Image (tube, rainbow, N blue to C red):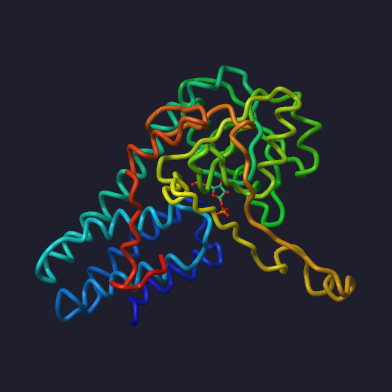
Amino acid sequence: MDVHPDVERTAESIATMETRGAAAIADAAAAALATQAREGEAADPAEFRAGMRAAARRLRETRPTAVSLPNALRYVLRGMQGEDVTTLRDSVVDCAETFRYDLDRAQDRLGRIGAGRLRDGDVVMTHCHSTDALACVEAAVEQGKHVEAYVKETRPRQQGHITAKELREMGVPVTLVVDNAAHRYLDECDHVLVGADSIAADGSVINKIGTAGLAVSARDRGVPIVVAAGTIKIHPDTLTGAAVEIEHRDEAEVIDDETRAELGDVDVLNPAFDVTPPRHIDAIVTERGQFPPESIVTLMRELFGDAVEAPWQEPGDGVP
Ligand SMILES: O=P(O)(O)OC[C@H]1O[C@H](OP(=O)(O)O)[C@H](O)[C@@H]1O
């Protein structure tokens, strides 16, 4: 079934990482579902529902690791109610709007909670670019605290440059370092502050590749590791034992054509994420408060219950 061109464009933009970051992906997916509902050409309720499921599947298949994407799709499709096309359409559009509004508010709230951990004069080390992590720094700055940052470059896509720029816009002094220099500068830092793409039931944090190594180094240097992540990053499937799929991206992000030719027969791996175990994490800051990683499972049960639906599936199709 064809999906609305806007859904196709959004899916492309997520897959190519023009739209990136777990929260931004969730927001874009909800907006695309609203467009599918508003502008899709469905003759009857069954066709409307099938069109919504097809749009959700197209968005779902773009990137596998950030659970904010399927959580957004679940939220919007669960709100799809009605016996005629107009009611169905309105319910999806309303639900997508509520989701996007709540996502924004949740980030503001978690920012204020995370800011409570930062004292005047603190230095943070960041990895990749996380809007949740930056919300904590921004709130601290708004409270009048002076915060400085060591920003890891984050190979291969160098999202650290985005972080550096946004911190500078907040007036935060920034020192950009290559990833391998993190250990050297941790003694000058009071916190490691990162985001998350998914949080598993045991409190493991799945985030940009390099987070796990940074956490090991930070433990060694006695620097607390704080993960800023809205509850949209909680991965309900892990409650029943499912593993979080780690995305592997193209080798072209790591080496160019010329280097590829020089290297010859060499395998290149480009995993986008890694898993930091709960024992290396001090706190997970959400809009519902901050939690030790081990207690995330309680929040997960409260928010998602035990049954995880895949509302984009066609009836009778067993594959989520
Ligand atoms: O939701 P926010 O906090 O903005 O971002 C969360 C995480 O999403 C990013 O992944 P990518 O750059 O899309 O691969 C980073 O891993 C970042 O920590």
